[in-house]
Image (cartoon, rainbow, N blue to C red; front, side, top):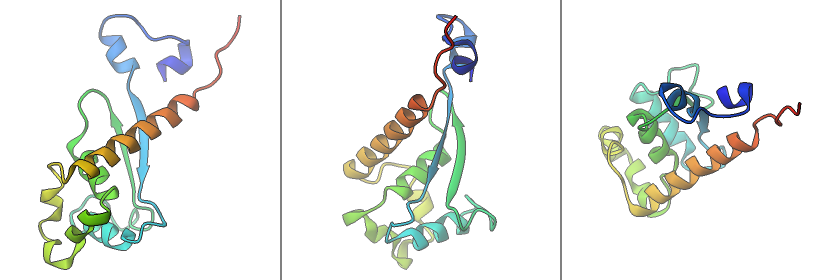
Amino acid sequence: AYLERCGFLPRTGAARRFAAAAELRFELREDDRFVDDKLNVLYENGAIDGDDLESGYVEACVGGEPDPEVLRFLRLACLDGPDGFLLEPIFSNELWTFLAAPISPENEGAVLKLVAAEAAAARDGLAEPVSG
C-alpha cells in the first residue's frame, strides 16, 4: 500500500518494515483431485468455517516471518503426488499437526513456487507510477 501510494519504499526505519509487507491470497485449486479432502481437513481443524468451506480461501497478511497457519494451508494446498497418501482417512486426525513441519522436499518446493508466483502477481498488479 505504501509503495502504491507514495511510489517508493523508505530506506530505513520501522516504516520500511511495514511498508514492505504485502497481502497475498491463496486458494485451493478447483481442479485439484484432492480438493474435497483438503476442504474437509481445513473445516475439521477450524482453519475455515462453514462460510469459507466452498471457496477454500485463506487470507493472511504476512510481514516478516511466515504465519504458521498459512504455512500449514500452503503445505496442504500443495499436497499432491506421493504425499497425497496423507489425505487418507486414517491420517485425518493427525494431518493438521503434520502440516506444521515440512512434508517433503517436493512439497516445500511447491510451496515456495506458489508464494513466489503470488508475490510476482501482486508486484505486477501494482499501479503504474504517477509521472510528474
